Image (cartoon, one colour):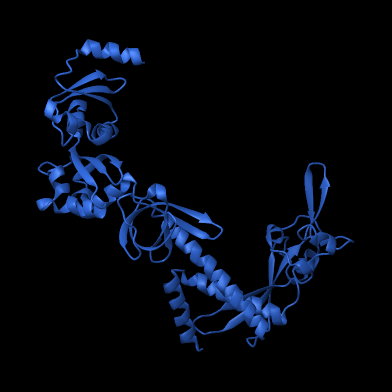
Length: 409
């Protein structure tokens, strides 16, 4: 493969996997270094490869860490450089007693653990020797030595390089996916149902799969294979098997996100969504207000001939949506929240405890309450008030309400 083909292959991998080009090159360099060490290196060596993608030249180097000294038993003395401590140990670099203790010999002295690391001339360079090359050398410096370049690797070395590339690319791909989706939590995303395992639904999001758990599903949805839905990215978690993108179809913010797509007035800021109350799969109440004179907030969400709200309803598998006009005045907001029921009067029972009484006509009473109390429940959730509903037949005075309220407190 010539240089142009090689560079083209790197760019193709970068684009297909969504991995930065620099990470792909770094992965290939690590694989070449591993193959080189397998065929031409010695145990304990730290070998680096540097690839010039323009010229195709390959430079191999060996790295030594400058250390203070070594004792009679062959262990490093003095302050141990951070990179020496962090360097992934080679099992062959340490004696049998150290290998039984994760390649480190630890002696307990008081409350402090003293970590002793075996000296390896292929990895460590004594300060005395380093100063012969440069008087400015100090403990912790990295001394780089150029090695003879080899590109003819044996079968085992080539297999080692292949394993390194596969592992590193998989890790880089996982990191890229996690970084991308972690920054998109709360966003709306489109996906296709890939498969179902019991109650779990796996969704193809393009670069990765998303997971829809039962608690975040809508009962009215029929998650058929290859069916496309819109989801909200609920959370992105890192696991040993890679990033997991948790999706939601039941979160109230999904309704907001769908309206943002359909209603440009929300995106421009002329219409603001103040509150959302939702019972997923059944009904949603959304309170809106206008920030610009002459803009109808409810009409903006409904759209011409109801096309905008109908698009959202279809996306939510027929879920009913009540668009409410928000008001700073508690009485007006509570009255509006009972839509589609018409309210006769709203009485503030206790403002500090946010308790109100709503009066409706006899023919509106069942509509105000809703099926299994859903309408009044969503109105209370939307407004943040505790709401009681009365019809004119149930005549009750303001004082009686207060007495009744106190008896329950």
